[in-house]
Image (cartoon, rainbow, N blue to C red; front, side, top):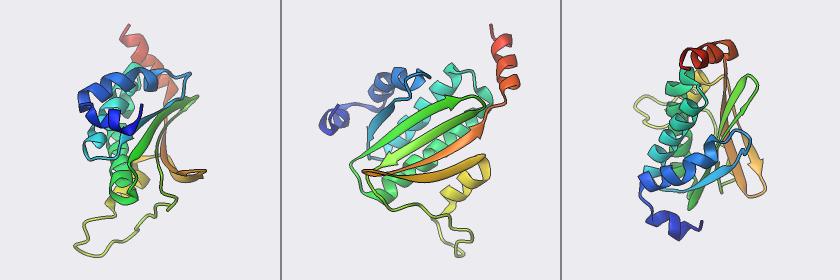
Length: 162
């Protein structure tokens, strides 16, 4: 889909369109969202839907919050017209990646100045994610976080809901 087509879609239409792509654990596909503020909400809801489908209820709150932070950073700081969102699962880990067209890597502001309103997003990612980082790509970068999946807890919840 091209940007002009995506910009015509409502947030609800984008969620409906992309949920199937992200929720297939074997596909590991990226979805492209327009770089606009409402895409952060779309990305959060998509990740929530994927986590529910994968029975990773213990990661819902942190997954939603951290996804919102990465998407907001990509929209606010990169100036690109599109962002990518990818959710992958491998044994013991969940990974959420947000890609953009900028090659400027994010930096963690350890002690922002008093009254400074920015810089808290990556500190939040640092504190809640088990790992996070950024990778340079041929055309931009990917900023990601990973959270451990407590496989026994996830299996117990899945069994209890059957």
